[in-house]
Image 1 (cartoon, rainbow, N blue to C red):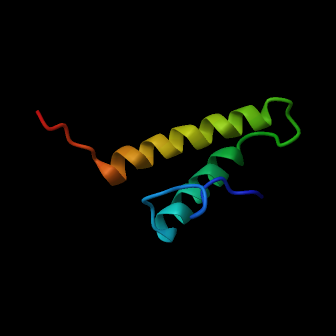
Image 2: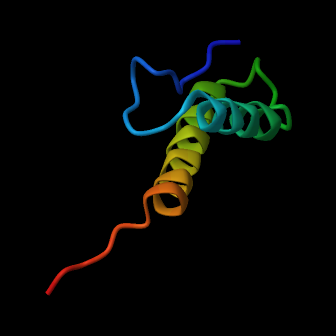
Amino acid sequence: MIYMFTMENTEGFDQKTLDKMNAEVKKTMSKHDPKSKDYKKICEQVEDQIFDKYCSEVFRPSLKL
């Protein structure tokens, strides 16, 4: 399986966090049929959701007024 999240294509995450993110993608995608015509699109959506989730959990941006 090709993993989306690597040190080369993400910034600010350590390898342990990237491994967790990839494991979550793999687990979620295991519920979908790889032969489905929508598999790639679903995978991209799952990756985006997980990336957004980890960005908000790991970085917790604050707003300075």
